[in-house]
Structures are given as C-alpha cells and as structure tokens.
Image (cartoon, rainbow, N blue to C red):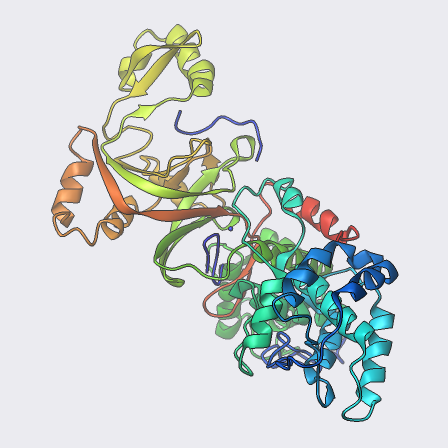
Length: 543
C-alpha cells in the first residue's frame, strides 16, 4: 500500500494549538465486477521492440511546434527515445502495433478515470490512429502518429496516474511527500514487459474506487436514488411503514441489500442486516435502527457521492503503489489507525483526532521511540489559555493536576504533567519526531472512543489500544514480555525505548475508500477539504 500509502487504502499549514509542546423502475443494478468491453485497466502487453526503423532527433522541434501543448514533454521524449536510438516504439515491421489503439481507447475514456479534462489534440490523435490501422501491413511507419502516440501516453500517464501538481496538493494541506513518478520510465517498462504483466503505477485503492465510480455514475444517469420521506423518528425491526420500499431500493442500489423487494412494508431481519451494513460503511454505530440522522445520510445526493469518489481517487494518485515492512496509517476522517505489514492489513483500532480548531496535520514520519509512563510537556497555547487562568482561580491548580513548573520560556512558565493515571497522555506515547509536534498516545478519557465522531483532541492522536500497539512494535524483542510492558506503563517513572528499525507512520485524509470486503466506505469531510480539491480538479490541467 504505501510509503505514503493505503493499500487498499488505502497518504498544512494551519495555526493551531499543537498537542505535545430517486431511481426509475427500469433501472437495473450494475455489475461492477466485470470491466466493460471498451475498458482497459492499463495499456497492457509488449510494445514494439524493433530497433532498425528509426527517425531523426531533429524531427522533434517541428512536432512540438505543431503540438505546443505537449512542449513540456520535450525532455521526456529525449529521455525515452535516446536510449532507443530514436527507434519507433508504436510501429514494427507489420505497421502500427495493437497497443496504440488501446491507448486511443484510454485517452477517449479519460472520464472513466475521474478526470473532467479532454486530452489535447484528441481528434488529431484519433484520425491518425484510424488511418494507420486501415493501412496495409508492412507500410512505412508514420512519424507524426508515432510521436503523437508517445505524447498522448505521457499526458494520460501524468493525468491519470500522477494527478495535480505537488504545489496544488500542498494547497489542500496534504504534507505527506508525493510518490515519485516518471512517465518515461513507465513507458519504457511497458516496452520491456511481457504481455499481461503491466500493473497501473497507482495504489490499489485507485482502481477499486474507479470501479465504484462507474457504478455510482450509472445510478446517477438513471435518476439517482429515491428520496426517503417519513415523520417517524425511529424505524426498527418489526415496524411496518409506507416508506419501506424506498428504503429497500436505496439499500439495494448501493449494494447493502441483495434484492429490491418493493412490495414489503415490514422491517424484517434481512433489512436490518442491510441497515447495519450501511451503517458500518459510514462509520456509524451498527444498531440496525433507522433514525432521522441516518435518513439524512441516505438522502445525500448521488452527484455529491460521485464527486467524493473522484476527489479521493485523486488523493490515491499521490501515494506510492506499495510499501515493504511494518507501517502505520491513520486515516483522519475514519478515526482509525491501521497496522500494516508489507501491504497486508493486520488489525485496526479506534483513534481520537484533532477537532476543527486544532486539526491533525496530514503528513508522514518515522516512529522512533516508545515512551512508557511519560511526562507531558504542555504546549504554550495550553499554558496560556488553560493553565494560567486555572492558577489564578485556584492556587492548588498545579498540584490538583499533577503538574510542575520546570522553567520559563518566552515569558511563559514551562509546565510538565508528571507520569500517572491522570496524565493527559495516559500511560504510553509513541514518537515520530516532526516539526508539528504530533504523536500517538494513550489517554485517560476512554469514553470518547464510544462516539461515532471522534474529533476532540488538540491535534495529537489518542489510541484506544495503546498497549496492543506497544506489544506489536516490540514483538521481535523477547525481553519485552506482556508483564514487562504493563509494569513499565504503570511505573510512574518515564522510560524511553528506541525502535530499530524505525516504523513509517502516515497520517492521511480519505473520505471515500474501499475496505477489505470490497465495500465502498464514506466518511464526513470533517476538515472541509473535499470541496477545495474538487474545485482544483475542475480546473484545466497544466502539462
């Protein structure tokens, strides 16, 4: 999944207090498991490996003069064709190779990739490919067709697989380093590969979301889903209500209900199971009860869900294809930490993330330390806003909160909270040194993990199962037994443990993703970042 990534999933400049210093009856349900005939997952197979038929490098300036929108690829052309001694890549001794027609299909169907833009010079490209296909076998290669094929591929690869610029993604406060991407290297690898061995140079989550995008666009083009209207505050197992057929149809359309029975008015067991499935996909308590908030969620326009999928496909373009070894992923809108080993999800836990005023930063780092029985060094903002007013009201404030003043900085006292059960960091913290002063930690406020929406912190990430994470990270050191970890957490004396090797941590922001069961999940855009990115995607791309 990632070195910045989510394999299935599935990776700021903000001022904040940092922690730590309706559908018609004619509609049919779409099968998204089989690609449509015209759809190619990528441009697969061998390209021409011939080396005899060549063109002159001096031909390139005239090509870029005729097709100036591809001028930015000039150095990429030389990097690609140079090692080939400027041999044709899209033609062999028999004429145009099949992959050129496949590429044309991909370029024409760029909309299927969640891209709103049209390829530059698409009509010219189509005419040249159609002309080359109809020519007899053994005809001489056509230089303009060759070069335009390469340019269109580079545009497609950059647009579909790399996404918007890093400067733009930084504008959405995404500080996780972007994956390295080279269209020329990808094209060269395609030429050298055996048929069927080419995989798209994007995280697996991208292709999964693309399949669901097709399905949701089909729902939209067929009129969307039915609006659910009822005065009932709660609908549950055994109830009989007139709105039941609309509820059943909605749950069928999105895959939670196997059959769209439009006659039964009874809330039966199969419907309850479907409601629970829907709740699970939205990160809600799986109680199988339909209330006003759930109906509001179910009535959310399909057009906005399509936009949400497209936005998160873009984010999936930014993260690496895969990652070896252990790594951790916190998906902020999901309120969960995922533990991966070589791109296999091992387990997950609930987390609490930063509230809107003190957002958790989207970035990555390398976990280096586990600190048992930690001190908490209060950030200046909390000292200023909470501690000093507290001392003015109660002279025993520091003692009551197990705090001490350890010095002075910038005209403010430096305040530490001593280790113990009431320490705000709990009994253990996990450090991956970073300029944002963000880390993972235990918490004495366990009740918050019972909430569906868990944005309560000052920016740091609170863990529901900190001991389990410590045990996992220390599992290769046999001296760290369960009893030793428990004892260290409750020792009241701070103990630092250095991890070797360090463990990558990725804090990311995905409001739509596909889980291990292949189900499409949605989460609230808690930091209101989807809209801005959607706007960027509607802009004319720069190449």
